[in-house]
Image 1 (cartoon, rainbow, N blue to C red):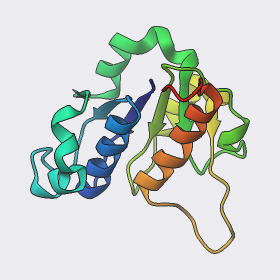
Image 2 (image 1 turned 135 degrees about the vertical axis):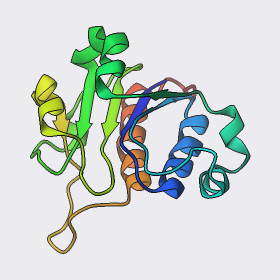
Image 3 (image 1 turned 180 degrees about the horizontal axis):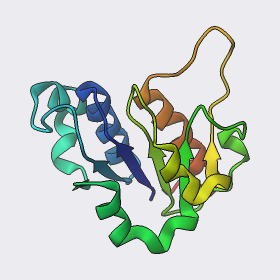
Length: 155
């Protein structure tokens, strides 16, 4: 249904949970290296439970390698970032879109987001916090994209 793209993830439990979300939404997970852990690590599998073996996952050596294959879809890249004022629910998502999420500490590189600046979106938050857990953020944005494209109970 959608493509979730993790740029340099650092926490294995988050990636495992995101894999589980992807399986349950018929979405594809793309992971762009470097990765701060081994994808076979026990904590990834534990968070992903028995869903991990059902996951459609693609691991890329770099953003450039990802772009070689997906450059033609750049207009459908959406970047979740704290560096935007546009709420995610103001974006118009289509099935097959690429929803990008950066590492837990650094986010998505600004030079990469500049490729489609109008599709930078943020999750509004109160003044006491600066960010959400990565897997929570993926769930929020992904399920809004699904809501916009939901067709009579069928993903």
